[in-house]
Length: 90
Image 1 (spheres, rainbow, N blue to C red):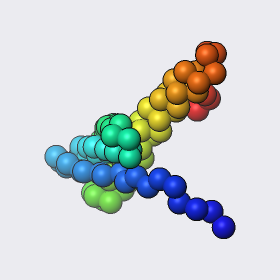
Image 2: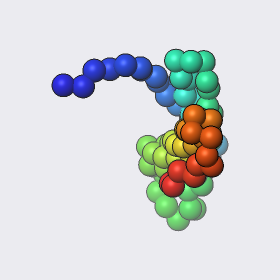
Image 3: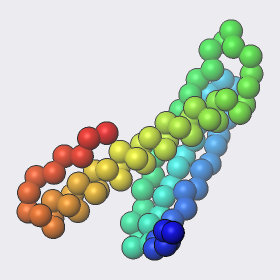
Image 4: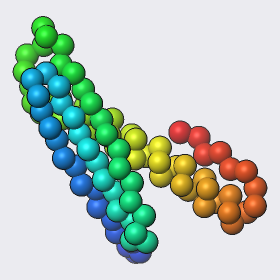
């Protein structure tokens, strides 16, 4: 059985303007570190209006941005501990 050591939450906010959907994601870590990322999608004019789909794509892009930032931070943290250059693959 795994024990929960740290818990953090992602907040997601969406804005819609016509065919454009924007997502803003914010992650706050327990140590006070905060990451933000944005995702955008633009519905093709021939596609039917599906608000949920635009939100899913924009959210996925924003979360991908958070993932990149977390990997970068983890690489820096590992490098500080090991005194070696670290490159974490995506």
